[in-house]
Length: 288
Image (cartoon, rainbow, N blue to C red; front, side, top):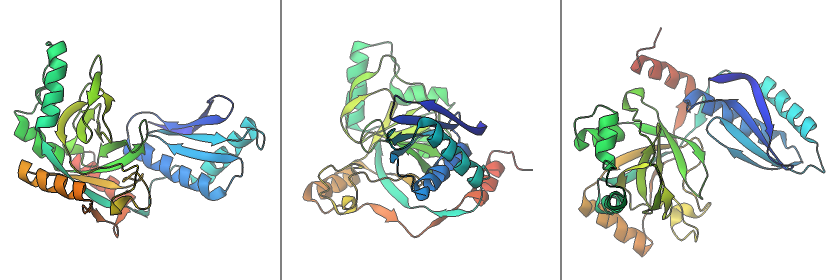
């Protein structure tokens, strides 16, 4: 749900949380990114960094250069000028990510957890049951049938929160309770209505459904596609998951090790937001 006006919350003495709405909604997230772009374009000297999130964004600022009250008022004025309408087009890269669904690495991780918590249903079966899917093949088809919107980055360098753009491909899943102590780097997983790719070996709580050999974070910036940033994705990118065999997986893995791997990135496309919302409404049966 979209708020009538932004809600502001102090985050200590050097940060402001700006909440645009609540829930995991494409429209709210798009307005977040459009407002973030407008605030950046305003060039407010006191602002040191802006971190977009799903339905909000955090502003880090220098309180010696601008007070909390003055900065929130300025952001409120920018919001009023930008408005809450959702229309127009914007550049949007399409990045294809190869995925071996139900692979050995994530299977080992699931088995390790279930050895300690035997009451835990294996992740693919749990996700199938939660979404009325008959089997793993159906889960793979639904997950890979849509493009995903990069809604937010954070919690760990390069970690992405991905929203499915096709409402008919929506998949939901509860998180682990308690969380795992480890997750393989490159794991593809679902939590709530979001998909993520783990950029490194970390603890985690999303349900594991596959693994990609294609890195999404390269701190050394060794590979060509990380020459401008150690994180592959940017907010507003789109992601397509491409199922691959274990043989194809091994080929990509070898290219990554050799340093010759190139991601499949289409960077000349434009995303028409208003046309997408019309299409999405028709797909979900909400068209007028």
